[in-house]
Length: 359
Image (cartoon, rainbow, N blue to C red; front, side, top):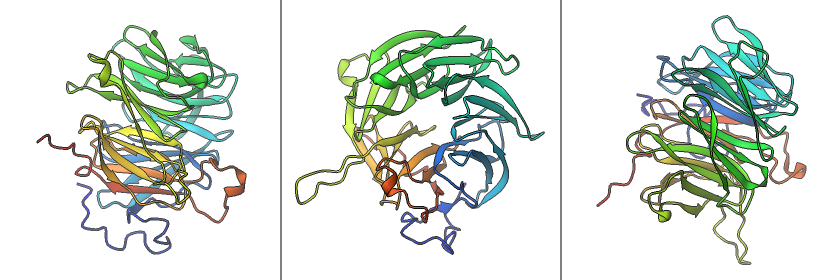
């Protein structure tokens, strides 16, 4: 499945090897500006579709075939840069949220788009929640609110005030976690209806950049990994059996320089492997790394790309790792280079993310 036999000269025609040092599959017709969000279709669909949101105001959809080739399927425009995308659980709809302060629902079969959410400031995150007794879209905004929408009504089912602007969020029913400015973390339980479960100060000293929920061996959501702008990830259990279960590790840093200084980069995204429970991090240094949090070890580092990696995602069965290479503005406008293309790469990853065998 997604076999490597056809890896050959794929995508090597126009792309310099320096842009694709891992020799991964290149997605055709990538976005025209920095890539803010990536999401693979859910397991309910037989094929693999990938959607990407971009600062070029568009959301694109590709079908990813077993041989690694990507087929552009469709594109929709929003009224401003797109900051997040999400799938509905049945794979029939895509949600798009961003700087126009709206979230829109794209019905893929009819290709129709309707507005389903509205905030007073840009929407940073959107996630679909599928509970036994309700389904809704959760949106987190810089207007310091978290809102829940049933997509049929212009008013939210519920609105929760946040201590600060929403910077990152994740949902894995029955748990949601939101990271805000001011280094606040709020964990919500979603059973029955969404409600605050725990408010925490961040274990990290610097601004949050990304958060991802992980599951225990019984596949129940049990904690989250939090990435900061200071090249560090915290592994946090919501209810740790032992306080030592929570720990942080450094990543996305240069190996020191002759003058003794180390370059430290933001952790831009974190994703957990859906089968193995291991994780990937991507950073402003232009690399991805695979980790085993239980063995507290790095499974694989990557070579450095020409630009930062902004987002990553695994497909539903954990065969494909997608990562987006584009400028994240971490070094300011001076380092923005219009000559550099944006890329999305696909990597067969199932074996590379197998956990360390405990000897």
